Image 1: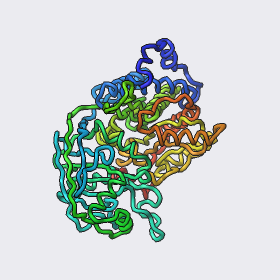
Image 2: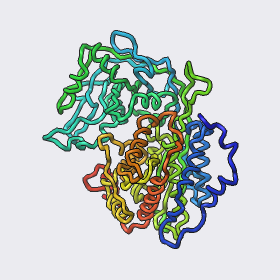
Image 3: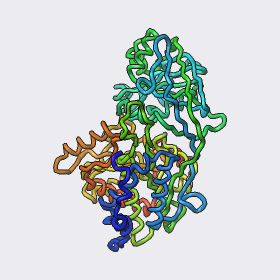
Length: 553
């Protein structure tokens, strides 16, 4: 919260010069005006979108609304037509806003309750002011039901009225089954969202996920910041199974729960790694009461379209504009305590990059064949809610989209040889990207951490689930800066200390050259998608190929 009033002192003519005079025509190439993508333009957008004025851009807040209005205005200035409802740039998404009272605690068997934030975070799928959950704790391993792998962690147990204790991630592959659950790559079965969904389908009263830094790829402080304060969800559909208690506990707390039940958590975990492992009722009760403020609101997706000569088909760029808002004041805070999650990298940078891509596309000397849509989503941080809504309410049928390019944070550590596009290998988008990379003296790098499941963590994933070929920009590995080790250290420092923290603010040592290179690459890739003679498709063996195959059968 360092610069709450920088806007009041802006040289307005200077900002207009940066953001408004970007309309010079590009050279008479057929493609996008790539020279329009500039680091100073990215920086200008980023400075506004991550300013304290926007108060962390939480959905359905003043700051979130300001961000949506700014993005709508920028699309209009660039000449993108409204792609939302009723001739506007907005697609309203119904959301439920809930704030859990910090007096929450979790009781489990004999002994002191586990403390909110220190040991546990909790929220509820039941949209009521007070939700009481109690039931026997059952350890269910990874909490997976996967018939294609002959795997059922709930086999033989009736979970009605019980609370599941669950490990995150997938069971590991073995020497005899090297591709069990995707081998080293995480599948959706390993994601925390799936764990809660499956526990609800099993009829459980609640589910408790066990956090470890290794399994989550981030520390407990990220769980604290992400799952405390205001939470968002989609309104519950009548008949939809929901959990009264959805909780995360630290590894230390999980070990203590097992100890109180006379069990050893390491032994339980080891037994759960093999097919046929049985659920283990722990014989102790979990109980918790969620007291929460619940309101139904709306928060918009922002949609603009550059209409092509064949408007029945489209290409889609996505980036989420929401972040974590502001944390509540805490006892002992100094008067000037920074409580705003500015989200400069996540995802003001991605928004700024997509605006620059939109600029270059709008300045192309010819219209594309397929229409090119820009979708700025809401409520990504709360479970990809805006993207899920768009996937269920698309402006074109799912089969009409040539592809999706998702940008969730830019590379601020300098130029790189590789560009990492998560999911590229799953569809023919990968070959298109490789060809373009070769032309630009670059390479499409592999996912450097397939076991972390980053493909399932951003807004392209709901679109992939309905069959739209999708890829998402990720961090590079092969920096070409003067000091590649320093660039890697800068990236690691963000991931370890700033991600989902109030410290995610603009840094003076950022190098925008890598972001510019990547945005030029993705602008050209999107243009080629829009003009490709054939529609891209998922590889036949991919699970995401099924929806489109079903549409054509």
